[in-house]
Image (cartoon, rainbow, N blue to C red):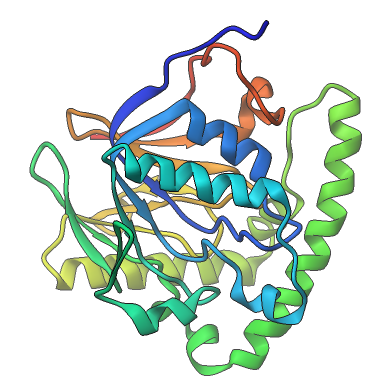
Length: 271
């Protein structure tokens, strides 16, 4: 019989870019993570459901439904859930300000941590010039990204058979292509500037599928990453410390339906 475990309790959980409704969504590891962590407040920071892909063809396996049900179960147990739509689930922006069954829909939020710091929480596509001014190019790029994920999926099937951990082809490419590096840096700079404009101490965002925490722009920049490539999330502990959890780096976490005791997880922290 599987050994039961007690979920880790944190003050706040930040998740983005789940892309439910796509074949690239890592729903198994995501569900395992949601079983391993409980939070008082949950922010869904955009691109939770991929409306772009669902328009072109319906794909919604049971595992994706399980993720939604797990989140709703947390709400029923008392968690506050704030849903901030992104560009892939922009259809929900028509309902900003509405409360749907305990889920608050917001364009952005200002979150205050336990130690009194204020963070702008926003998806970030509003500061992506390609998405804002060349939607056709964004759609073309999304198609290329899907192709890369197809290759990445089969590559990681082979890696698992060899006993190796998950590895992201597209993340590796992003950090080695000069234009991609410049794009990421510009995106981070714009988001940091917006947080500064709103007199916040930092920004927590998603959108570009690049999980990182730093203060290179003189303000805290936190990107939650995604559950397509990196399988990452950000948590706030009860002392106000933020931690970036890299779930995919844990071999135990890659199996679907994991029900063993929770391993000690390494992650990046920022005070």
